[in-house]
Amino acid sequence: MTSSIPTNLESENPAIRTSSLAKSFRSNRALAGLDLTVPEGAFYLLVGPNGSGKTTTMRILLDLVRPDSGEVEVFSLPPGSRGALVRAQIGYVPEGSVTGYEWMRVGRLLEHHGSYFPSWDVKYAQSLAEALDIDLARRLKKLSKGETRRIQLVMALAHRPPLLLLDEPMDGLDPLIRDRVIEILVAHLSETPSTVLASTHHIQELEKLADHMGVLFEGRLLSQNSREELHRTLRRYMLEVPREWSGAPELNDAIVHRNGSGPEIAWAVWGEPEQVAHKLKDSGATVRNVTALRLEEAALAILAGKEAE
Amino acid sequence: MTVLLHIDPADTRPLYIQIMDEIRRALVVGTLEPDAPLPSVRQLAADLRVNPNTVQQAYRELEREGLIYVRRGQGTFVSASARPDSERKTISFQVAERALRDAYRHGLSVRELITAIDETAGRTTTPEIKSEGAAG
Image 1 (cartoon, chains in turn purple, brown):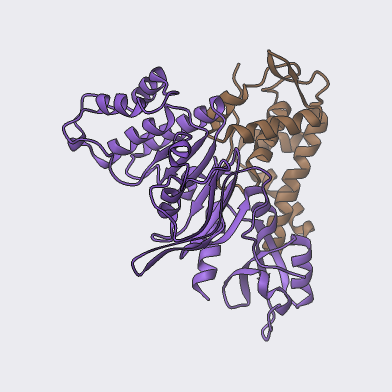
Image 2 (cartoon, chains in turn brown, yellow):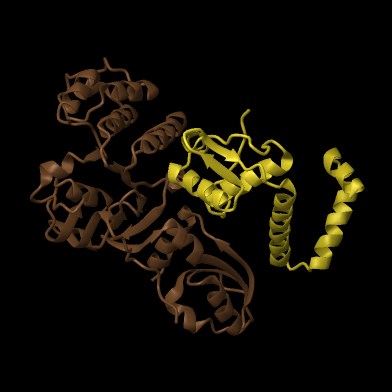
């Protein structure tokens, strides 16, 4: 028996759980039955093309947007009725600009933001601002995209919340600051064990931190796995196939992505590697090489496979 | 003393395995000696820019293998009984496995690979490899 790549993640005590979550904006369907499970303590990468629903998902978790249907829980609380309590436990790096008065200076904004959180750590906020080269005297209306991102990061981390929602946290940052941000996140996780849900177009940059990945496409998950499971079970098989080869029908459901038309082809297949290799040999193919996929390669294979349908 | 561990994001081995293998390598080449302290989880995670949980996992596995031990409140150390020789063997099998897989991918036989290694070692211009090859 072979099966397609799982979208269902078991977790005894998830930090985030949504089921059949749906949301449309006028005629635009943002989420179409999202079943997201983020285990407590996970660093979960949410990837997918623009408009696949990443931002809407985060905004629903914060109760900044209400879903049309479906269920959502953050630390077992429904954001819809316990919004303030839920938001108090979340550090959020939103996509876009900081909300505040244009005339306000950055230092004042941080004070203002901190006043909403009893656990706001003034010293930590200062050291973060310093590490990120933030000029506290700047006025909000003058901020560049990169400056905005850095300030949002301080606002998300300095109250040491148990959950971080990072929406494209690396967007607009130069390479040096990107590396600094990774360093800061690593140190933060060492000191403050937390759950992270991060969306990104730059999987490589967050790849070394991630231990779970969900691939989102048109408002639903195409896959949702722990990194270990993906690594073990999704493999690329380099095959040599005979001229009149009729494929491996037994594996049809399990083939995530096909590349090449022969005599050499590369397939990404979901399944126990030994069993898959066995079935490929039975079909008449020669398995030349089997490799695990990096998270980015896995995400691309999953998305490319979907688009080829 | 600091240990330089190198991990490669393009490598398809899981990160915690890469960390374990790098510590083995440090033992074999002698940059880590029995009873030497290892960097803290926090420090190594920061150096390698990886999730602290990953370093924790690597240390846990190495402790299970008996290669390192934790002294509470003081840190993690290389076991006095860690035997570079046996780690040397583990590493040589790993290197051989990688070479064999690559050879097979290129349609080469084991024999062809071994012959090529011998010949290459004979005429390499890297002096360290050359002298080792001659000694072996």
